[in-house]
Structure formats: structure tokens, C-alpha cells
Amino acid sequence: RITLDVKAEIADALARRLTMYRLRSDVQIAPSPLAVSRGLGPAPDRAFADPRHPALGWRRYGPPATGTPAIDWDAIRVEHCIPETGIELIADDSYILESGFERLNGVDFRKGCYVGQEVTARMKHKTELRKGLATVIVDGAAPVGTAITVGGKPAGVLYTQSGGKGIAYLRFDRAEGEMLAGDARLRLP
Image 1 (tube, rainbow, N blue to C red):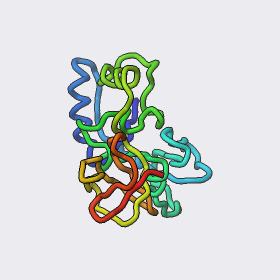
Image 2 (cartoon, rainbow, N blue to C red):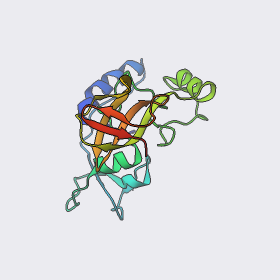
Image 3 (tube, helix red, strand yellow):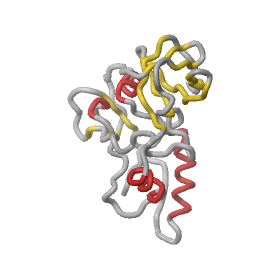
Image 4 (spheres, rainbow, N blue to C red):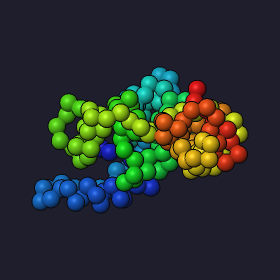
């Protein structure tokens, strides 16, 4: 048995995609009755550390946890530039290296074959990333998805914001000095 932890909004689409790859194998793909609980601090029994980053605390699968305090997960994600599916991670559009997956333990270059391996390996070994996610300092506010410009030229897109910072997808060659996203002013830390 393998459990995949994905956002509820994309679970059906993922199940359909995985069904295409099972071919004639006797594999069943079905929703799980387990609830996901997460928190910071000491992990409860049967919980494990979130593998993406130590700041994300722990995750546990089973009955919903009770008594966990409210946590501003967006602030933690922004602080450590951790993308979220459906916001910074766009299906069929995001490249995993541009999204920081190597830093977040999401890709292993010693592993065998996987979908997208050729493109990912080429990006890693044959070129320097020219675009990608970065944490920016934000003065003001702009809606998620606001275009970023520098001197009137497109430079990227601003996504999640919290505590005067944000996650932006940037063209690194244009991400210098002051950038604008609507009425917000941005700069690299």
C-alpha cells in the first residue's frame, strides 16, 4: 500500500492520470479515509517530519488531530520559498527545478527513470536556471498572480505574500533593483 498526500482539489485528476500508467497491472487507485494533521513542535505518535523543510514541522495520517494551534502556514512557506500546488505550482506549466524541488528534497538525480527526467536532467546539468521562484521583499500588496515589471518590461509574477515578503516567479536577468507588481514595490532580500 502506498499513500499519496495531495490537495483534495487535484486528487481526482491525479487518480485519472495514474490510472493511465497502471496499464494491465493489478493496481487499485482509491481515495483514502485517512485525514492529514500537521503541526509544529514535538510530533505526536505516528507522525513524521515533513520532508520538504524542517520549518514545516510534522505530518500525521489518521483520525484528525485535536487541540493543534492555528499556524500561519503561508508565512512559513513564504519565509522558506516553499511552493503550493495550485498557487505557485501550476499543473503542466511549472518545472520542478525552477520551483526549488531539488532544495526541497523533491528530486533525486541518482534515481532511475521518472516522467520528465530528460528535461529535468538537462536543466540541471547543461544550463543555468534563468527563471524560478524566489522570496522577495514586498512593500504594499497585490493579488496573487499579479505581473511583475522592471522598467516596463515583464519580469515575473507575484504569488503568495505574508509579513512583508512574497514568493515570486522571476526572470533572474531582470530581477534587479526595484520591481513593481501592481501598486506593490518589490526587491530581492
